[in-house]
Amino acid sequence: MRFAKVRLAPGEKKEYIICAGITEKENFNKEFEKYNSKEKVEAAWKQNEEHWNGEADKIKFQGNSDKFDGWLRWVSIQPVLRKIYGCSFLPYHDYGRGGRGWRDLWQDYLTLLLQNPMRVRSVFVHNMKGVRLDGSNATIILDGEGNFQADRNKISRVWMDHGVWPLFTLLLYMNQTGDISILDEEVSYWKDAQIERAKRIDTNWKKEDGNSQKTKDGECYTGTILEHLLLENLICSLNIGEHGNIKLEDGDWNDQLDMAPDKGETIPFTAFYGKNICDIADLLEIQIEKEDRKTISVFEEMEILLEGLKEKEPQKEVEVLKKYYEHIRFGISGKKKKIPVLELKDMLRWKGKQLLQQVRENEWIELSSKEGFFNGYYNNDGNAVDGILGDGKLRFGLTAQTFSIMSGAATDEQVQKTIHAVNNYLPDKNTGGIRLTLPLGDNTWNFGRGFALIYGEKENGGMFSHMTTMYAYALYSRGYAREGYQIIKSIYELSTNTQIAQIYPGVPEYISSRGRGMYSYVTGAGSWTIFLMLTQVYGIRGQLGDLLIEPKLVKEQYDSGEVLTVDTLFAEKEVCVSFYNRKHLDYGEYQLGELSINGEVWKNQINSTSVVLHQAELEEKLIAGRKNQICIELVERKG
Ligand code: G1P
Image (cartoon, rainbow, N blue to C red; front, top):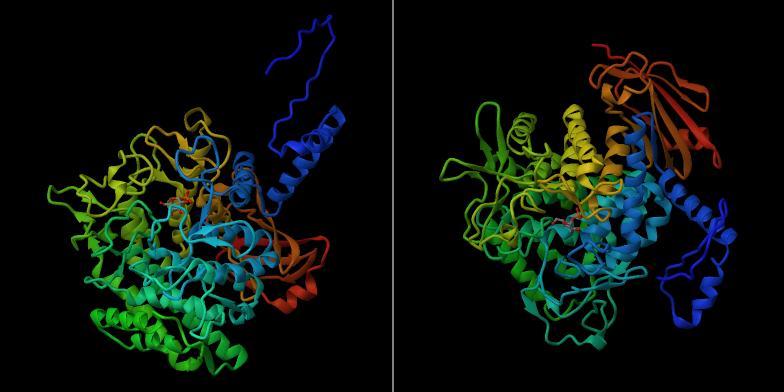
């Protein structure tokens, strides 16, 4: 860029407006006219600032150190940025084409839905149209609602973790809003040439047939969202490998582990699916209690899968899957079958528990009376990946620990031993960050391309913020607040050590072994951080529309004062919840004392570490159009 030469007299100044943007040629002048004077630029700048402050203020934490609170403001807009631009949109991204994948979509909504619970309903309903009859799904999210592309790189493959995320996010939605009617919404299924979880091609399908699943009569089939969720979770939990865990297929959350499609098994996602299956059983129980539901309707071929729940031997389960695939190979009849809910609920509960037990009992590696960890995987030769290796070295990663803890597969004793092992073996000596894994070791190409990465980079032992945040979430959710806090603190310190991390404020995808923050903004860690802070650390979350408050605050968070507050939305009303800790009590030392709403005492002494405000009470006490103040005293715990 060049400008004409100017000579400035002392004190004189000259201003330039530089506009950069992309638009069609014919719109150039129209766009430029919006910004072609100082006043216009200033007005646009102000509007821009207000917009982003508005986004950052939707969930706003105050009272920690200013730097920490400020950091969280930046983190809270990361999911918004990723929604707009997709993953890998910045120039320094060396991969990707700017799209967002299925799992990223659902996880970003954890925070996007907390910011705007009512606006996301239709997004969720439309997104369920991405599920195929084999429980897999189209992976790339395009613009507009419910528009997908099977795979941008035109490779037929299935990531087995995809089926867990919709239920996880929808559960949060149902709890925040109390709206379980979303389960009864009917939507179509995705259809393309890929069938039987990318193991076969449907040669009869043509592009012109469109991407919605048809019945054999050529009608577009629709089924309930509950049916979609059941299908996704059921198919995976029947897809069991020779060690009793769910098959890895072409990868799970860690998409670097993509080369064990035959004998690979994943323990973390066996645990996650186990939890999901139990959660579906809980949902059915709620439908029975709240709506006196006796049956649910599913497409008739699905009954084969439900029968599979009765199988107790893994090999038989795989046979059931085969039978199901054969039945739907040329489409479905479109007829519905009524399934008794009570019986289904019990079968699901049995299956879910069995998966959790498999992880708890068969994949636990005890190192000493103090330490142990969960094996994460089986490779394509069917050998356990983690454990004590031949040369006496250890190998394990954070993923299996995170999901075994979060799902409830790990017993309390196992959680404690895992924490010891993680703190002992996974910290990076240079940066102090918790690594995703110990060295993967020599690559034999029987597990995944992640092995080809240098140790300390990305999924091979970087401090992978997304998993570390999910680990912290898992710890908090099991009541290990102090240990969880240490983890959040380490991510925060590494991310804000600007001299070394060399990034703008926010949480990066990972911290390299040199301490450098890599791939800013576009990480699922952004969404999980806010979700973790609000629902676990501050402990403010919905329970089928009721508001549960269960703070897990540690005393260091009160170093700058005696009150911690958070602004958020609940039941479509703005609330500001303040926790007063006048005696500087630590987590475990306090319980809830007086609770007041908008200056009026609601209860003198709560006498417990948590409290539930019921929907009807909220309706009465919270006022629309203003910020409602909920103040809670933390007092010494009795007994
Ligand atoms: C990225 C991808 C995500 C994948 C993860 C691990 O994570 O976006 O789909 O599961 O790597 O391989 P993120 O940047 O969201 O932390």
